[in-house]
Length: 314
Image (cartoon, rainbow, N blue to C red; front, top):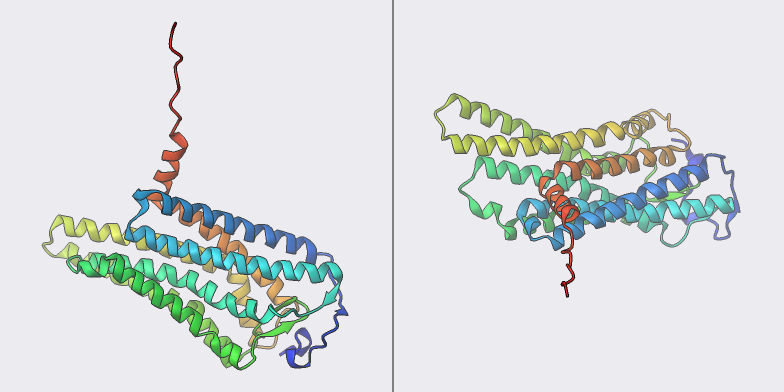
């Protein structure tokens, strides 16, 4: 563990001190701020369309809205974190404000809600394909209950980090986060943050493939088979989004893995969160591309023209 990369808040000196600022810090901060702003704008735009257009008032679109809501919250939290880092970099100081630990904690429920929102979409498609007659699982009430339970879980599981003082101020990265080295908090956080939801999504995807193959071998109503194939297509899109997230975030994942062997890069969070922000922005864009009702609503608004008033001939 590289103890020089962070300090314990219990011994943090209130008066800020000077720190070394690399030449690439401020350009990277500005780039990350732009990424966060784009995520926020895109999320608000999509949520506005879903709320205002009645065509989008369906259970699948509600689940899509949940994903964009988590993206919006994550973007706002990241924007606050990067602005704080930029201020310290511009002043060339090391300073922990009163909200630093809260921002570090809030990153966990925001990011995990983003991953679990894809799990909820895959679960809905699975239930629709496997149990089409159980309409209560496809109802607004049931899906709202699942969404609220997911958000509650995402806010509760990181409490352990707060109670045990494991979110600390990193001088080099100018943020508060759990130090990355081989420890129970890192494994615990990684498991609930992305290992669990990604594993369950892949499990659902493989179960749907197996179900459709078995249907193809048996005498099955064509409507049932078509419905299952349609739901499989939607889950496949979710898997593609998860692959995009995992691919773009791979450098950060690799750095976390290297930290288990005491080879943590000095600016692991600065570099790692750059890939996280890029992955979030890319996923938001691809999610819009994959959401057909959303594209139809946008195209309808673009093509809509105001009625022309023809002056009366006198």
